[in-house]
Image (cartoon, rainbow, N blue to C red; front, side, top):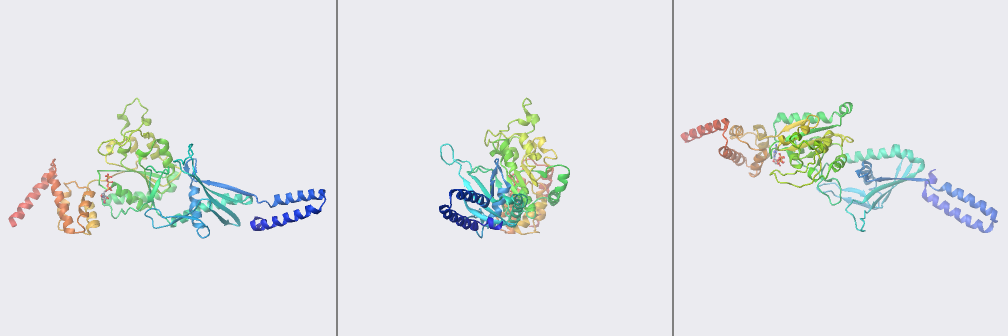
Length: 478
Ligand SMILES: Nc1ncnc2c1ncn2[C@@H]1O[C@H](COP(=O)(O)OP(=O)(O)OP(=O)(O)O)[C@@H](O)[C@H]1O
């Protein structure tokens, strides 16, 4: 059998047979010639290799094909030593080079005694006018092998590739940030390496809340069997709400770094309709955080009860997109609330697993109650103005300071003045690690805000009295 599959041996054998056949034809009578002809045909048919081929397309009915990805990774690594033509790239911000097979390249793999011939092809999509269309080219891998190995390929080789690719990917693991902003090549998601430095050590939030979030995340990732047993999609929804600059984006980055997940930054205003939203979600990978920032600005998800009751509520077209100042961002979006709810419910993403869905908003009160209910947004996290604990974290991160003469004053001021962590971080950044300058400027800013505050709450008044007393004591002692 081995001999039959050896192309070189087959070639020389055929050449010899042809030569003998031609030589004999000239000397033998016609009857013997015919018998010989039949014999040769029989031998040729027997020697003809019975190859089978399979095609692995990049997209399967417009959904990305996991096997294509695995093959690309597997062959990229396997063919490095033997392929004559490899494509090499260095993704933006990445330290690693990536090797892939170039168009029309071939590679021979051997698996459990079976020779598998691989080739990679790209077919350019042409529009009706003969020019290149904006649609992506058709890309596919083809593998061919002897018919006898069909079962081996199906039950052993392809799973082997998927497993090997997982191992290779894990070794070269580089997490990605995917976005669905429009892409010239018509791809659903485009990605860049994700290397945001925010972690649970650097994020300035209340330590009790921080611990609570970490425990919740650890519990979530460890409960695969539990989710399967109770028949639910393995996903969890977080709603982060609070004023601008309180660390919602920073917390998302910290969570992704903590879990070592990819991030999909889903811009709802770039999604044309529910079916595109569905495609986007189905093509996300497991172990990922899907983020919709400023959900109240992307689509109108206000309480349906307040809307025109004559409309079919869930199908109300949500075509209002306003920025934070209330200006319209764009019109005509037809992602509906039911579409968003299906996404959150995991209906569309339940083919994958381990997904954390995070919505952020500055205006929780604007969101539909249906979206906020447990099971959809499982955890509501309020990120608010700087408290004393958060302030100390920022001072430690930016100025490397634990204690300072002004700390007590800062604590008192923070109980009456609203400073976001972003405000404090900005001041510290401008002081180039000069501790006294940083702390002094922060105190000054807080006092300024205190005085400028139009509404004087009882705490503010009490604080002003204390400050006045302190100042007059200072004056007396001078
Ligand atoms: N809690 C925090 N801990 C550490 N840094 C913070 C925190 N909040 C804000 N910052 C700093 O302020 C900057 C802006 O914060 P961030 O973008 O996370 O806020 P946000 O709440 O997402 O704001 P927005 O609602 O405007 O999107 C960050 O780059 C970070 O340096």
